[in-house]
Every structure is written in C-alpha cells, then in structure tokens.
Amino acid sequence: MSTSPSPSAADSSGDVVGAMRTHKNHDGIILALACVAQFMVILDVSVVNVALPSIGKDLHYSPTGLQWVVNAYVLAFAGFLLLGGRAADLFGRRKVFIAGAALFSVASLVGGLATTSGMLTGARVAQGLGGALLSPATLTIIVTTFQGPRLAKALGMWGAVGGAGGAIGSLLGGILTAELSWRWVLFINIPIGIGVVIGAVLYLSEVRRSTPSTKLDVAGALLVTAGLSTLVYAIVNTDTHGWGSAFTLEWVAAAVVLLVAFAIVELKIASSPLVPFGFFKNRVTASANVVMFLVGAAFFSMWYFLTLYLQDVLHFSALTTGFAFAPQAIAIIIGAQVTTRLMVKVGVWPLIMAGTTIACIGFFWLGHLSYDSTYFGSVFFPAITISFPLGLLFSPLAAAATSQVDHTQAGLASGVLNTARQMGGSLGLAVLATIAYNETRSFFSSGAHTDAHSNSVAKAQAFTAGYNQAFLIASAICLVAMVATFFIPRHLGKPTKDEANEANALAHETD
Image (cartoon, rainbow, N blue to C red):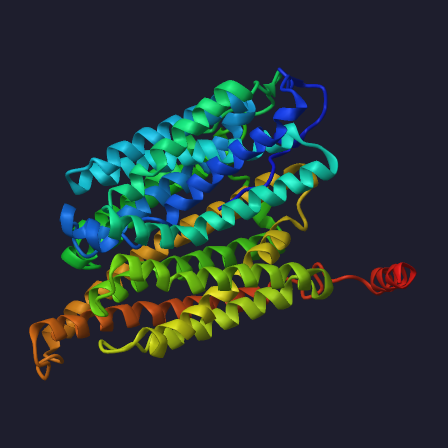
C-alpha cells in the first residue's frame, strides 16, 4: 500500500521553507522513524485477519458484518490517502506525521478496549484516517531528507519494510491472538506509535511549501469515502434484505448520488482535485488501474476466507493459522524478486499477463476445498500459486500506470493506483463475503447436508461451500483482469534493440 513520492515532496527547488536543520548523523534515526511508521500502517491491514474469528465471537459480529473489521480500515485509508499526501505538502511533514501517528495510536487503544462491534468498527475507521495521514508523510520525510544514491537506498529500505509489514501481519496476529488475546493486535500499535511520536518531536524539523500550489480537496475525499462505504453497506445487507429490495435499492441510489457528486466536484469544482480524471484518457494508465482494481478485489478475499476456513472448518488455532500463512509471505517476496529481475528484460506486459493467469488458476484450484481437507493436501499449494503472482504484479502495474504520465505527476499517478487497489479490495470483499454467506445459507436450506453425521460437520460443509463459491468468483475476476491486460501495449517497458545492444556491450566491457 505504498505510494510514490508526490511532485511537491520531491521538488528540490527553492520554494521549500523550514529546510532540514537536522544533523546528518541523525539521518539514520529519521529513516528508522519513517520505516517503522510505514511498517505499522501496512501491518494493520493484515494483522487482524487471523484474529477475525475471535473478534466475531467476542463482539457478536454477524457473518457478513465481520468484514467491516477489515473494510472500515481499508475504506478510510484509501479514501483519504491522496488527501494525506497533499496535507503533508501543505501543512508540513512533521505536523502531519505526528498527527497521523497520534491518531493511529489513540484509535488502536480505543479499538483494543472495544466492547461492541460498532465501537471497534469506528476505531478502525479512525485508524484508517490516521494511516492515510501517516503513510504519505513517511515518504515525504524520506525524499526531503536524502538525495542521490542515498535516496535510492532509503526508498528501497522503506519499500522493503512496507512489504514486510504485510507479510508479517498474519504471523504476528496469530501469535498475539493465541498467546494474549485478539485485543493485542491493536494494542501492539500503542508503544510503536508513542515511540514514533517522541522520535519525530526530537529529530524531525519542519518542511513545507512556502507558496502552496495545491489546496486540500476535503469535499472530494469525504464524498468518495461516503459513497463507497454506502455501496458496501448496501451490498453487505443484501443477505438480510435481498438484492432487489427497496432497502437495497435506496442505499445503492444514495451511493450513486454521492459518487456522482464526487465526480462533479473533481471535474468542475475542485481547484486541485484528488483524482485527476484526465489520467484515465490514456489507455495504458486506465488499463493498469482497472487491472489493479480487479487484482485488489480478488486478492483481498484470500486471507479473509482462508482465515475463516482454517479456524472454523479445519479447527486450526490462531497461532497455527498464523504460521500457515508464512509460506504465502515467502512466495510474495519471491514473486517480487522475480519481477524485479525480469521487468528490465521482458517489459511489463508479459509479467502482468503471467501474474493474472497464474492467479486465475490458483483461485480456481482453491475453490475446490472440502470440509475434511488437509492443509498440505488442499490449501498449501493453491495458496502458494495465488501468492506468487501477487508479488509478481505490483511493480509492472506501477510501471504501466506511470509510464505515460508526466514525471511531475508520477507520484500522484502512483497514489491513484494504490487507491484503486484498496477500493477494489474493499468492494470485492463486500461482494464475495455476501455471496459466500448466501451460498452457505442455500446449502443448509437445500438439505444437501442431511447425510452429515453431526451438526458440526453440517456447518463445516456449509461454510466450505460458501468459501469455495467466493474463491471461484475470485478466479473469474482474475480472468477479467487477464482480458484487461490486452489493452496494455506489449512493448511497454521492453528494451529496444539498441538498448539491448548497448547493455550487452557494457556487459562485455565489464568482463
């Protein structure tokens, strides 16, 4: 969920005031602050997954309502992410960094103390808003502190730590839930947040624009977040009211009104719109964002449903579930390494096509679970097959999304791509969770479980039927992403013949 440097953050011209007064020896501390803060933000997307069954039981979430533990955070984070980046430019990286870390920490405390589902959901919204302020500020801190080769190394460290946060989240969530309680997946942020705030107060000086060229599009951020949240709410409640009910249609209509209002604000009113719709006139940029939206819709579901399957059907403990996700984290890291090496040789199109194709196969494979399956017999290999392309896809899609955008807007284009992934994940999870629940309910009503020898087996069969349906639809979503990939030029990012010859000549000279 990382973003790229925003134009204003990376601008080294003379309109930046309050330039760094920090001693060079403190650069390592500043980099550590930025990386730890980014780790915390990314961690909270995945750390709650393993704790979901425990949270659902303790706070009495409904089967479809449980997804709000994930979606409340993701929607708020995605809806305000671009706004957070501009706030860091406008008000100063130090102020926004401290505000984001403080809000994130307080929200984590409230969430950990939650006694009702509404209290936890509200805390997750506040966490998402804090993360949306904090994450772009961490990047702003890096690009205004380091230059040249040191900047490249710092960005590499920042990106690696962000990736580690997502990979470690499930394992850490399992350990904390098993050894302490699910509340500690939230409490763990408090000492980290306090340390980050103290470090920022001691070691960060302020950097902001003296003549800001952009204004905060608060109306746009509020409208898109409210519109998507309303749409998710309508989808989630179809299990109770049905797709064609007056309740559902009224909420969908409200979501459409809010999203249309957002589009009007962005196109006609906002002087510095959050989402420059002109980006999407370019076929390559639009296609990359569509593919990323679909990738998010499919992949967010895997950890959510696998967590429930492993604990509710196979009866894994939270700790065992955390360790069961470790191979997937390794597969993601391997995929990222492979794409780094191959992209300069083959370009972006083959990697995006390979990633969506492999993911399509993996989800289809995973969609044939049984209530009495084993982890290594039915979960391990398809989950690895899905996770590897997740690491394979992100860099090529980012390269495609920014390839035909002016360099001064590359950071904004990357932010839009990241937002597309989060929004896709949120809407995809809402749809798939609802379909899975309806499939589970249909399984019971059809009498297909009458041959089960116990009620617990009947429940396991029903849950498995719902999860399988969700995975098969995720496979279909990846198939649509494959089709969308054909709108990306096949030569994009591929070295020309002259560039290849020059690279070979340099290699021979080195030899």
